[in-house]
Length: 125
Image 1 (cartoon, rainbow, N blue to C red):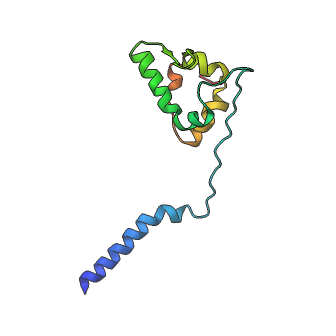
Image 2 (image 1 turned 90 degrees about the horizontal axis):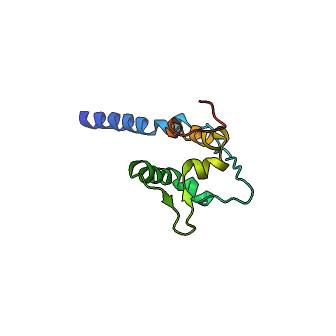
Image 3 (image 1 turned 180 degrees about the horizontal axis):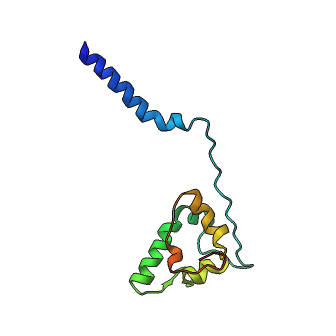
């Protein structure tokens, strides 16, 4: 009988602890994802679709970094043969760091170290 009481108290404590994040957030509104400002130059297209960049941009940038910095190779798109470079391709059109990068990074609570090496015309150092 005593064991059953201890088990029930432990079970109630576990359930309260396990469900606490849910109960603490009841009624809190979810913040909408920020709208990304794209200022691509007329006639220019991004190397990847917007959907693919939303899903894989960090993996793509990591692959570029590995090949370029660590292996010392320049990248070429096999389909178009265009040179791929973060500053040459991405930052040419998406130059405003606050509007393009920082809004989503703040929303997702990440702090990438891209700007330790790369410049950004629209950002404070």
